Length: 59
Length: 262
Length: 247
Image 1 (spheres, each protein chain N blue to C red):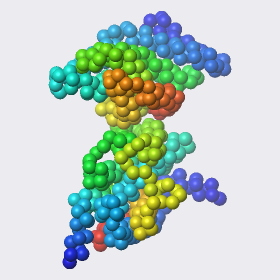
Image 2 (cartoon, rainbow over the protein chains, first blue to last red; image 1 turned 120 degrees about the vertical axis):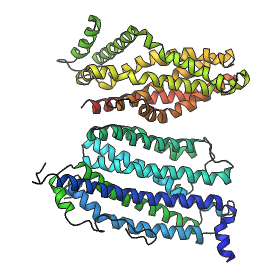
Image 3 (spheres, rainbow over the protein chains, first blue to last red; image 1 turned 180 degrees about the horizontal axis):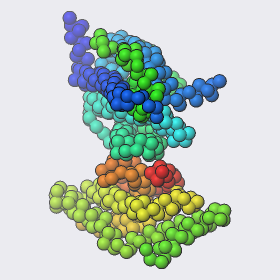
Image 4 (cartoon, chains in turn orange, blue, brown; image 1 turned 90 degrees about the horizontal axis):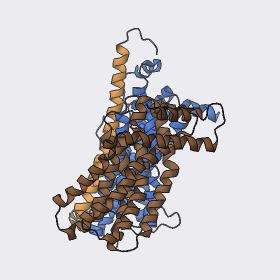
């Protein structure tokens, strides 16, 4: 168990190391979420635009 | 033959489907490399004799700093291509890069600050590298701000392309600032191209993280690019076909994080 | 429009049409553009002194906000002078291209067949002559009010004069990029200030050394290098940005 506690302690630097990793993790996740939301929104908008033109006219 | 392929890259419907198909090929290797690098960096690598376990921040700081520069360069190059050869898809690539780059620049600044606090005794220092990295963040924000302020998409593309190209001068400044000026920041240990100073057990996870983050960037770029391309092609006929298969996991790809499925 | 202005505009236009573009005609066109801008600016003398008044007010704010003690002010004087100069030069940037864009002169410049970057460089030079140079001459006065020794005056004038050249050039790029944006003030600052930071750093350093009585040659040379870089590259970017916004 002391091995795990040591690991989390990071030789005393825990207060610097873990926030860095957590922040990076958050940024990574945010990028994924943001990108997928953007794509989903674009698809939604495109669908709506197409639905508004029942004839399916081409541009 | 190669020329036709290049020509096809400029076609929005082709890019839309190609990007969708390519994403998993970047997303999964990225995930593997990042997890592997994390394990190697946090657990396998021995503590540094000077910085103890604190040096492990390098495994997130170096990749994010690398990202901030690499993404900007990609953005500037694709903006230049779009400007010179008037390729809309190229502009879409540039637009997709900016938010990714900005978030990682911020991350690099904060992780660097957290690393610097115990090592240099200060959270911030106005030395050339930190200052120019901060300028890079402002350049990203300015790019995004200019784009959103201009209503006409084509004009926004071209104006922001000029801005991106002008700002690219900052990238070599950031990179070489530690050799040009006496700075708090350490001299490059990986990018020296001859013999890196780090032992293999510390170097391997770093390389894995660098590569993993790079592939991650490409994966995210591909997803954003699809969204960007789609929103620019108002009601082009190909969209109907591209959207008609029901929205499956295959077309909006991404990697599951920590077992969370979309 | 008076006759002479109309003449200038026509001359810029006409100096190309059937003849090949020569360096001499390019220089003539640029000179005409420069004198036109100067003449137009002198008509609205009230607007001319606005940046200077702004500079004076801003430098006054600092003693009020920080401390009236001259010894403390002397320490912050380089920074205060430079931030104030930077902001004042920003103020005039919005109008660098605005009027000409609105009345179509900018379009005429672009269509004239003369080098657009040359003409825009002429306009930017006019901006510097009207804003940067006066600021360089005013800065010592502000500096004296902040407790700066008299011996520092030449250094202050030199650094602000050279630095403001770079500021005008960098600012012209931002102004050109934001031509199509309404109420572009904040965005203009966001675009210009990051690129202006090196100028600020070197300029403040040169001023600081001058105040201490030490040799300020090194940062002044760096300032000069940035200015030269700006002179060679900025007009090209500015012209590209103007073209984008005129389409």
